[in-house]
Image 1 (spheres, one colour):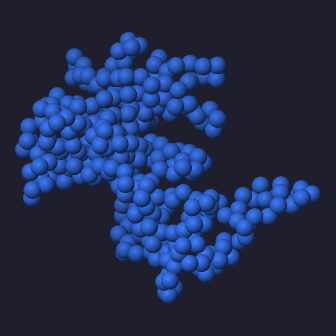
Image 2 (cartoon, rainbow, N blue to C red):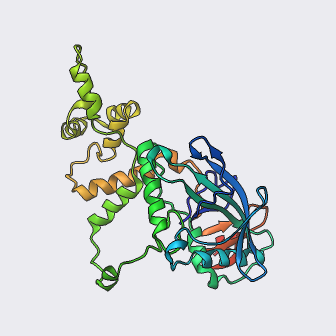
Image 3 (tube, rainbow, N blue to C red):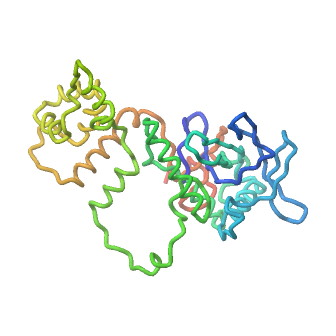
Length: 335
């Protein structure tokens, strides 16, 4: 899946990141080793009908290979880039490609490289063009509307590390893709489990990772308790006690408290003042998810259509990611 662009109204299109090998010839260097690098790159055919990454500013050419090329990886990475190149040659899409290297020395990890592709509809795309043969690429252009970027630095770093690890073990190597994970033989032979509604809401909550503080920072709490002048705060109370407190508050007081304390804001998602009904755990999680999705910070910002890839020019050309064809958006809206 592609992450929504920062401003869909200003820059239509989708951005996809593919995990790549680290090319030492392209990387900038620092005293600590590989430094953060961003380099423009183009995808071109070779004389023997293969794919090359061409770095014009460093005069480097690299044959396309996946990040696991040294371990006989049988992925669809090359197929993905081939399909994208054909779409570019047929003037269906335009692509800006950037090679990005991010050092991770602070975490004791090797640097990671990605190929960042910003894809948008070509202004010459012909309406009615069938794209049925390019479903493998088009499925990655759907905007993920349920993703919420956490503001907590630690949570964000964990999410990025998990996404990179998943991309390395997927069949497409697209960062954030959940459609093409390698399945073990045992999981393939098992029958599909029955739908369990509480599990669905548990997964929604874990994916969204709604911004929250820890109930109590134990390290800070111990330091405060060892001082001569001990300081205690309301948020030092156990979570179940805080939950009981907000249950007795009216909507106005709870809203005011949530404005000045992110912990109470987080806990308030699970409480509806005046609701004389005991909710199960999965119901509280789903309520929290729905209220978060309806927050003004999300509803007031422009969101891309998840299944329509629009043109960045004053044309109505777009790609219907459901029917896999080029359409006119006005014609689609009139249906």
